[in-house]
Image (tube, rainbow, N blue to C red; front, side, top):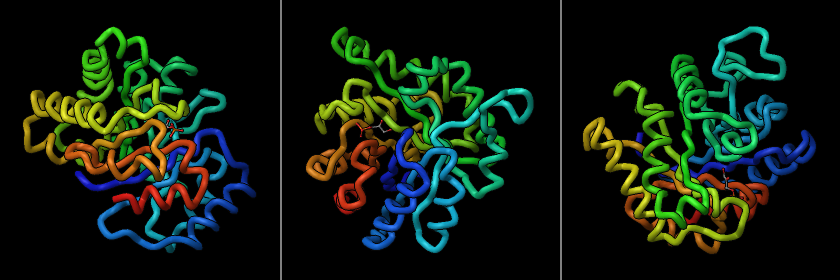
Length: 250
Ligand SMILES: O=C(CO)COP(=O)(O)O
């Protein structure tokens, strides 16, 4: 469903005490911002704590990854059912770090998306090109292919549970953001690509977030763009004042 979203991807940061501390700061300074949905994604070990801690707040908790299988001999992995059993209903799938470091292919990501949706979870599906691909003017082609191979198997009915995050790899953790115009251009392209396959009405209903060095200083001009429905925030989501300033940038 199209909505404004600010999601914090904490990545592999924060042990339990640090998680308690950051959540405490967020809660202390929390003022619900009408029309903006806020999500935090701590590491697996802290999901249960975060979910319980935020129960009385309108802040959702997401996982950063999950395995595509339902159960079995997959040492070290976590299934959709394990997540839903502790209240987690949203999962980030296909982050560029998962693709690059953990070699997750489009095919595996498609299976993860299906497994999440079968378990009635919401998916935040990440896509985005690397610097060499942008320099070679292949960025549209790359993102289209990621969407087609990883996401376009989703039934029309299930699109309600899909959020897309466009995260150009060259802008992640580098301090370099895509310009608001570059973000808008790609977001419009993503919406057009969805419209071509599933129709404009459905495409208009999909929330598309931007991620990559979003900070309080640049959030407002990025979020002001027509096809940008919010942000997936890395580094700045680890500091409560910065994260909440980004929420308030809407
Ligand atoms: O990868 C990101 C969010 O998923 C973005 O990270 P940064 O905001 O640290 O660039």
